[in-house]
Image 1 (spheres, rainbow, N blue to C red):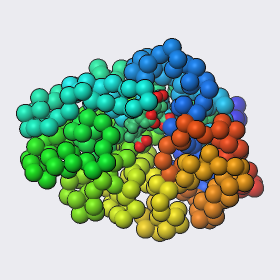
Image 2: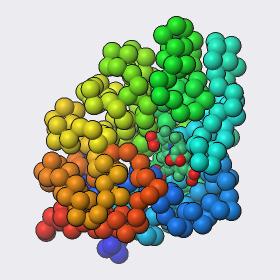
Image 3: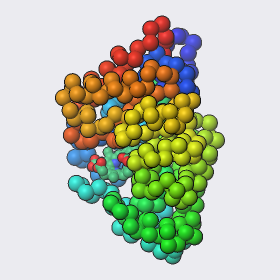
Length: 359
Ligand code: CP3
């Protein structure tokens, strides 16, 4: 770093933020969804002594977990350690993470009365631990010139969790309410727009330099229902998130049939799952957009030769163009060998080095 450069300007010129601006960078940036998690021995060791909720709500623990993969690998961005569901607890839902099962909401919303009872408290009150963690992590990352991503679930995915109470195959309760009582659906989604917008803005105020909106369950909807019941709310969240001045990535899964509609919701960058080849996805969202993706995370569990080929295929489809952020097409699985993560990160950097270019 030149002596005159401040940490803030080093981060502004990082390959991740340059790529999000559509500018060429010295290498293709890479980070990995769920880069902090169970595949790391450091994470498992810490979680032996602390529950998921403790780890999320303690600024120190959350910051420590966020930094674990940053110490282990040459990643180009950190993502604050939390989950998409704790804001729902602040709205009045009983959230727990059950070992070996996943998240559960004990009192899911099933009626207009349940929806009317949901609160929309300031997220600074509910998610103070995460905001504190963001401040701590920024101190650690600024000296390295690496940006920090804040995130939230998108209204549709959060509404589905709030209604189903946990995972679902058919989304019979969520879609049942959506189809049978569109007014109640509108009230629920409007409350989520308030909470999610406030949460994202609070994360930027605390120091997040990029935001990501996860609409992991959007693929439960066909295109026309997505456009009618989900996209208008996502559009409002994205507009308010962009108004904070930071770039926003919109990631969804199972939405290959209508990536155009995902892009039309208005994010800076579109995160695509691994079902659609990257070049095809990029052509469909528009080559002027920034794209993130999209290695099948299970390839990280494969022998290096196979993983290497998979990574090279994604890179070939990106064609060395500016505006590609390398990532997995859904979160890293717990069975992933740590060494494969290290080799993948280093390989993406080595394979995309652009001579003559500085960061
Ligand atoms: O990417 C990161 O490293 C940041 C942390 C993060 C977590 N969850 C930690 C987590 C993020 C960004 C999420 C988002 C999230 N959470 C999503 C959207 C992305 C996606 O994967 O689709 C969803 C749908 C959830 C809800 C959730 N949380 C589920 C379904 C599960 C159980 C499945 C699983 O992997 O265990 C969780 C638990 C969870 N969230 C864990 C972690 C590290 C595992 C908790 C543990 O250690 O047991």
